[in-house]
Each structure stands twice: as structure tokens, then as C-alpha cells.
Image 1 (cartoon, rainbow, N blue to C red):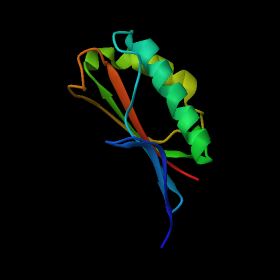
Image 2: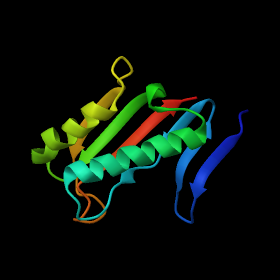
Image 3: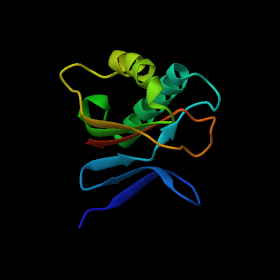
Image 4: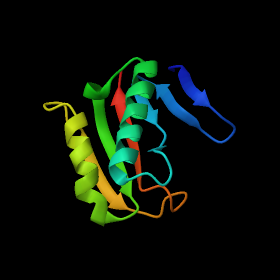
Length: 115
């Protein structure tokens, strides 16, 4: 049985959980009210930081889920994503539209990576 390590654990959730060589990140959101591009940049910086703390990096992401408050923002989010994601190491990905925790959040990203 493998150990479970939790990163940035709070009363409701952890920002990352590591078990069995896999890292699951909680949904990451940006600065409320900022543009989709700015929120996406902040989210991806947070993903980089959490993955580094877990001992891995974005080249090891195997799956990404992206939630947009409005699919009309798909191209704006993708412009930032495409600059960030390492070519040749792109994960399986799904993008959908959903009501996020508050109307000020426009994008949320959830990733799973391996160590």
C-alpha cells in the first residue's frame, strides 16, 4: 500500500494529493474578475508551482480538464494554454462550460500528472 501525501491541505480540500506515483490537483482558479487570458495565466502558474512541489512538472501531465464559464472564451483561453503546454507532451484534455464557484471566475483547470 502506498503512502498518501497531501499538499496545501485545508479544512475542505487539499490543493494536491500524491498516491501511487500519481498527482491529482484540485481545480485551480485565477484572480476573480480578471480577463480569461489573465485568469488562465495565473492558473497555469499555480499548476506549475504545485507540480514542482509534488516533484514533477507539466511534461508529466496525463490529463487536463478545463471548465469555462462561457465557451465563447475558448479561443482566448487556448491562446494562453498553447503558449504554456510543452509540445510533444500535450495531455489528454477535455474542455466544457460550467457555472463556476462565483461569477467572477471564468476558467478552472484540473490536472493529473505522474511523478
